[in-house]
Amino acid sequence: MKLSNGKKVIIIALLIYLFLPLLGTLIYSISTKWQATLLPNGLTLKWYEQLFSDVRFVQAIQRSFLTSGLTCLLSLTVMIPTIFIMVVYYPKLEKVMKFVITLPFAMPGIVLAVGLIKLYSGDILPLTGTIWILVGAYFVLIMPFMYQGIRNAMRTVEVKTLMEAASLLGASDLKAFWYVIFPNLIKGVVVSTLLSFSMLFGEFVLANILAGGNYETIQVYLYTQKGSSGHFTSAIVISYFSFILLLSYVIIKIKKIVDPAGR
Image (cartoon, rainbow, N blue to C red):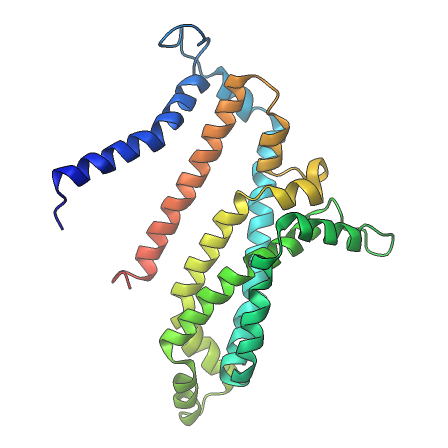
């Protein structure tokens, strides 16, 4: 579809509006000094050298990847068999499941965080400030996205029909699931996982309240550095944006691989 000149102008103006602040942040992050002049007095990469030589920054990135990855793995391990059993054997429970997955939307993040702190800050199960309380909270946070993606994938491949066909051919329920159903779910599983991962990678409220400095993620690190040099903070923002941009690119590429027809 060919765009008219008016639409092209609107799109270009919108892109300029969106990316101009980012461009300014990028220039500021590589400038030596930029105060009363139109352009910076000089360019330098020392802020990025300082950033990537900071052990706290590297560890914060690693923690964010680890926490988000563990959460997605746990969610897949729980959600795939749960949804499969519900669809094939207990379809009447789907209404209950739909109600359960809407709860994270109705519960603000700060309310969830306060409740978890109250529950897990005692002597019996002291998880506050650890990776495990973050994984648990993140699991609840991404549950609606994981459920919807996996459920839609199962709805597309007609799980019951495939299970019945596999059973007639002599396959057990476990073999039918692993060799017939699961390969057809990969597209929905991959997309749901990557979208959930990217959302968790940028989550701040739960990470700051539940773990804070005890388990510093990239968002918490950015928050703690807000009082430092503006050039250094800009370098953090650009680096973080680059990670998100790279992750989005990977999502698009993997989606094309698992779904070349673009369905």
